[in-house]
Image 1: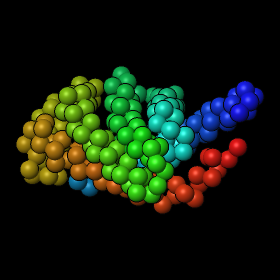
Image 2: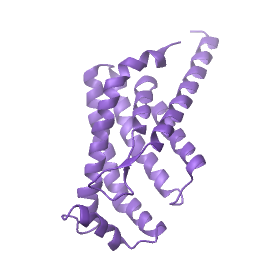
Image 3: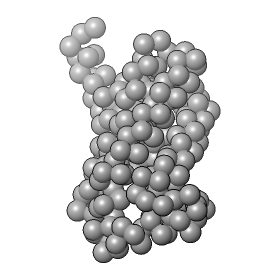
Length: 202
């Protein structure tokens, strides 16, 4: 491969990453609540674009798409948590895409894609559990001027098993993240082979 060809491919990949980052941002804007979690948790399908990019272009590209999504969101919608929520969103997002893309890149088969998505979904869910207990719930409490007891009470109204911060994350946040991981994974599996030729075209 000539230097010119290598540079051209790198330029094309950067353009693909930028486009997928923009698509992920648009998908992030289309969000909706689920009935069993407080309304500040909202479902979106932005990780589909991140995973598609990670599968096609590699885990670092997936992480870059996740970063572009967060940067665009900050530019156009701002932050209400002094960047805490956005940083946590980025960490949880790459916890999903990097394991999934690494496993898929070893051997690009449907079985490996499924294994990668399962591993990534579990990593995302565990990372979300830790981030919510240690960072996100305290941040929501502080920046929205809402006592932690009030946040927990919001969860208890929906899920009576919720009694404290840990059970809030265990019975509200964790199921939310698992459902998101399953939905995003299924959509990725359904569309990836159909659109991957566009991402691999030279």
